[in-house]
Length: 423
Ligand code: CA
Image 1: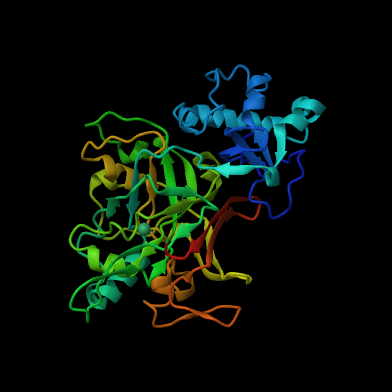
Image 2: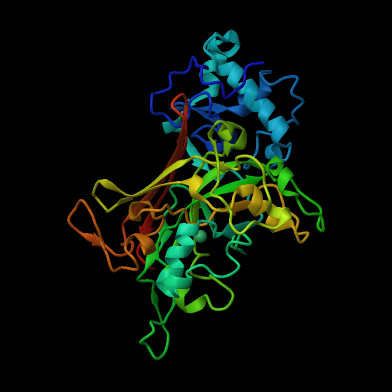
């Protein structure tokens, strides 16, 4: 059988050269149209392939899929079938879309019914998210933040290189790309103020992250060994962890961020499978001091995904403010999940685990305004002549990501959100 990742594969569906969605990607999502309520689909080029249609018309027969598994608001039930079964479905779709495979290609009615131009669809949250965790796994980001707020000489706290630091975030306010975000109000107290005041945040920021989604329900009390961790990861999305820095600075002691983060987080619509990312594995940074045995991994557990952030001022052109790469992360997804569950914490299907802000080594690769402008000291210059210390009302933040190896390029689509004024 030909691998769905084979760079030589071509589809009979026309795929533009720089498309995020060639036949080697085939990410899963949930969409609706004028005629369809929320159903599962796969992205191919500029089209969405309707999985309900394919399932109901016999194109996925002999895969033993539960009836109605794609005719749902979320992908949780489908993902709960596990990586192997989801991989089989991806393999079958790859076959159906291959240029030399006639079954769907030459069936005019099925082709026209199942392939929907993406412009005629509305993409929805792909999974119902029971739990959301945010890590803090970029050494460069943690060092930058530690230097700014504490001490450049001891920027990393003593635990940082021994465990992937994280906290439990808020799942209910995670929204799909394209959903506007309202500037939050909260308690703010600058070091010079005697008392806190209540007002809209003046330091609204983005955080460029990626997030993985899990596909199993484990039993409470049973951890996931690091060697098995990737068996529980179905795929990845882009993630914007919007942050109100002034609210954060006042509230975060001693338990970490709270209202500075939970007013909204944005994810991209297509779940790019870990299977599709196999071709883009990358070595992680060397971990010194050596990690404890339960976190020790062999082989390449990082992923080479090129990332960028653009800011688009109202009625202006978008401009790139950051370019970085997911491969810089000090702690890999496998280590994050092993650590998360080593105490017996159970995981659920659809859980979202965000990487933490992804910053690279150079100033242009920092994954937040806080770092890019060094807490407002070095404003960014926008194409319309204005400056940005933090985000302004009307700004749209656009995150994009793709993996490329010279033979194949697969992408994540967009993670986009426009900032509305405080209510
Ligand atoms: Ca974060």
